Figure 1: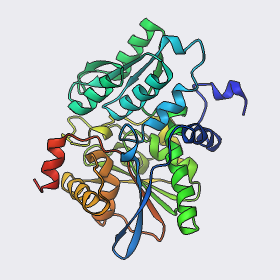
Figure 2: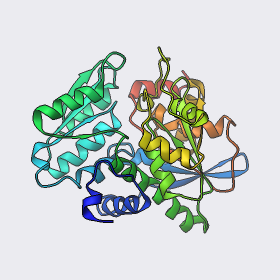
Figure 3: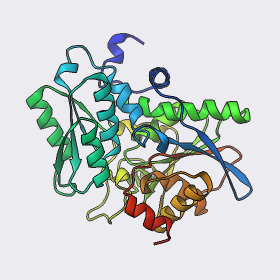
Figure 4: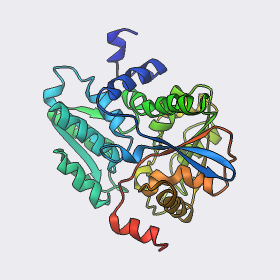
Length: 327
């Protein structure tokens, strides 16, 4: 793989890129734990990405993308768009690398995510999630400043960076059990984590999980072509997974792997958050609990080597307390 190919924003992500991203990330961050949890007579292996420094896996893609900016690009900075976790991942990487960052975030993003992104030194520009275009706003800002746009999933670096999570899962399961995972159940918004993890685990079955009413990746995979979220989608607490339309770069990888998808309800997500807190002592945000919710709800048969992602833990304190209390 040539250096020119590595810098091509239109290139296709691949396993070699995932391995390169993993090396870069391993140089600055330890692997997150892969925790066993007993359920229905089997062991589920839970990848605790909620324990990342920013509370979510998005730090991986942010670091991989920003560390590959050229010397000419770095002073002009980056523009990203996100409901909060990608925002914090890019802001964290930008602060560490001394790169200016502007983050486009929805007005209804959780207050904690808005505050944390600003605390990391990024400039936050808000927009109306249902009426505005975050992509167009980011493009306009980049045109004014010369900054590089860093999408939340529609980017080869982001897919490869998130795929380092899947590579860690494979390596950790080999070390702990002597075998690779045969099924990966992955929280899904735009599909960066799922598609990257699919590249890192070529022999595993891939199942993506989304909140009810926002299961556009599942419906797209079932239809064989990209299907956007419908008009007037329901309100959801899974803000990290509110993607109106997935991208060819993630969809094509998952389609080629015969990935399948399913959705979970608000009640199933709440139950998963309570179980994770009680059994694993982990704080999950709703979007970070959907994969576990799919398992606990019985919607997906377990295998001998099922691994799931607990993808984020950035949740409002009052909401988390209410859910844990059974409210």
